[in-house]
Image 1 (spheres, rainbow, N blue to C red):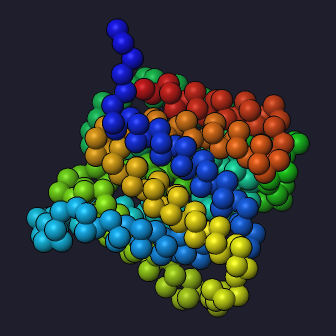
Image 2: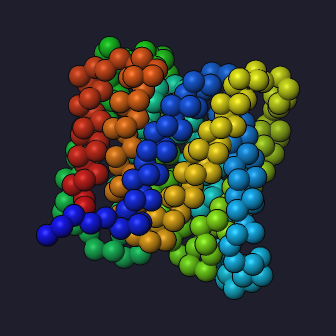
Length: 295
């Protein structure tokens, strides 16, 4: 039997690669810009990307067929996944480095399966329990304080791990909400709504809770890198993510996304000089193995 791969699977694997590159980019500027503002800037730049693609798709009048329930799921999913979950992930990268943060938050396929079981009444598999056990063991290794990689801060290990795991839960719920939400929208149409709303929510929230760092106060190089990550991660990444979900469903997309932590570990070791320790490798392998166990 010949090897074959569908368009949806190509989109999913490409998304994993994009996410790994994006994490590398934001890590280099994670100390210069607060996570919420960084996410807001990235989404604002990506808004231009998606709005530029709108004229090449269905007319704007096609939004009229989207039901109230679908709008509610879309908005709820963006608040949960893109606004809160992504910001927590960026904060986790700052605290514990790319390798750990990607491995921990990359276990969101398990939370996706969990929410599909709870909300969609999908059957529960014994493999799911085994997968949770493997991921739990991986979390233990990745939470180890011994010989922490240079990309993380030892005094912030517990908060960083907690942020990554919370991002994992929120991404899983958001993934399940997104599938029915885009039933009557293309991926570009969905992201043309999700991304600007996320940018508005994050920047307004940042202004509400405290003084806002002005754009002109940000180092030009840092701003350019963050803006580029908006095109790469939020723009291309979100587009590939939604296109994959529309074609192969949330569970399979989440499975393909599990490749991303391995790519993230490799790129962070090569480009960020994060130390490759035995607990780190064991943690990543166990987390990825736990995800694949539920396939």
